[in-house]
Length: 290
Length: 315
Image (tube, each protein chain N blue to C red):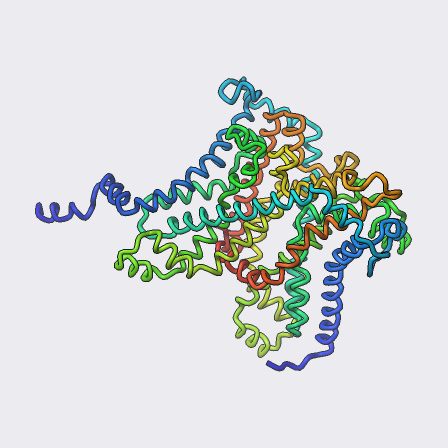
């Protein structure tokens, strides 16, 4: 529809464009700064505290230090394990639970649903959880960051809502053909709910990737820690010493931090464009819940 | 008469028969869901039972059954503890700022974004502003730490405008602003998505009708757009209020340091330190329990209020 714009509207459009561009730059610049910092020469970076639009000098020293030290590589491996195994367990359990809880004529459906919803509002809390993990013998095991979050109630409800929208007639006709529950789940429900499933995979995956707190309290062995806990030690607790060689005449800690950020964020930046088409979809799915 | 009674009988089968039939019909389904039920019992209901250590002087060696019962001792202790009131105040301050700044700015941002005519520009802005949401919290806090340092980016920009250089994360009074503005930076774009989705649900004809009635853009926004997204706003607000004391302790734990404890410590970081650093198991659990009960109460209040005022509610 073509509308004639008044002066006020034109002024607003200009202001709006400027404002949006500015905010986009603010969102983007810190990342550019970090990338430039990571390729800088350490002593040049130390003397330059201003904006970085290109690396100060050029050096790959920090990256060499990171990859020659196996702490980060090891953390990466642990995180990949948690991502792959954890998300698979998440998806299997969530899909199965959502299938049962969305099917008709199951007598205990409502009590089980209640039991799940209650946990969204009442939880044991930090200490009882911790003691429980110790009692179950999961302490200091990589499974302590996988099993306690095996099902997320919120994601389960989203998935159930998705499954409920599948026409019941499809499942009934499958019944007539003599299909059992596994057939119905794999051949009818899962293929029809693909968009919802993609979104839930995204949610679980991001949660696993970002999680650091539980790992920091449940795991004590350095070798078992996921990437985010290692990052915390380097970025927040400032322990770059293990990586800067003692023979260097200047501290390359700063550049190491920047390159650590780049190395640990790059995979996300690479898959981000491919995930984007699911975002709006995901929020719509979440909004149905309310 | 008698006949009709005997005829009616099979229509109302006994409960035991319903259960038996149900079980026979849904055997496989119950087998499937039993794993999930077991999971919820092991990782949610057992810890829930574990919260009774809030009423004990819990010693791990003695276990829950063997520890001494002390009633409400720990609750009384923390209500008399000055540091508890301090963390409560900090939590409320951060939560309140979050509610007053981050929450409305997402709606405003969505409104502005919605006014952009050029599709490519809109798409680009969206892509860029959603991106920070996907960077992990640890990395975000690492960046904040770098930029807030004495020689960091923010001090450079500040000194440009004549401000004195300070190590920002060491300043108790700056903590809340660093916390809030970094949250806006990370989440503004992402949190606007839900409102953009709500916009697309508004009937176009309403805008046309408003235009025929002579309403300008601003008027259209006020009378069509805002009422259209109100249910979404209310639900988001209710959910947010239910989290009022649960403000992200993870971010606080990553950003605070002994110099800023006084202003930065929130309830959940207090629970963490008392429990897992000082090993006051019972005291810490009592504070945590108070926190969840308070949150739930706020949620109920907010939900009831919104049901009365706007007819949209969670349940």
